[in-house]
Length: 258
Image (tube, rainbow, N blue to C red):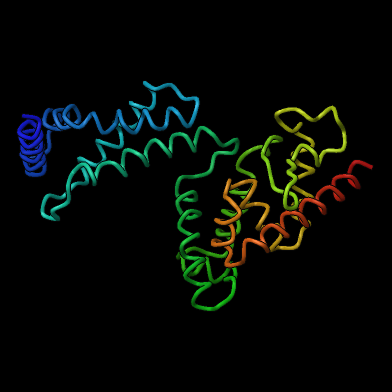
């Protein structure tokens, strides 16, 4: 019986999609949303466990993604609608969480370009056997070098630096950003605004590759293995760069405090 029901449901969805494609209407679209609401519930439930957002809010945002999928779906391509719709639902929820999570609002286009740059950078690195320059990356992304530099700066400064982000310091010990601040008064869950600025300034005084490693670890929440793959270096090199970078930041922060 469940197999029959599933087949009948898929057939009904397919018929409604065909009808909507031929003559779009709010009535048919709402029927499709109702029949596919389980996809939204599944994604909203997953993301509710990853954040502190209200479940009902995530459902509403997910429904926007489902509606976009309905509007974009093309029957002639032969894709299963559920497989087609899930990335739209997930993407809409991720955009919502990302936009709410940043302190400085970054245009969605810039966020998309930043994500796209990861794959582009990897391709260029394989092509040239070295890290691509800003000009090469910008050209591959079809934007100006100045815009790409603005995107990078916006990404680095998109959120306050958290004190409780753990980073490996050597083989066994660990440290976190809070330990870079000399004054014990600031060892709380969030750096004071003045220390955020000082820490960002110190970060930009580091050698480029070391800074890139720390940005990937602290600001993009990548593992050391992911950082190694992203930058085309070994995990050992990443670990050494993290330790070196933290030592330099401690020194620079101490000097700034004096």
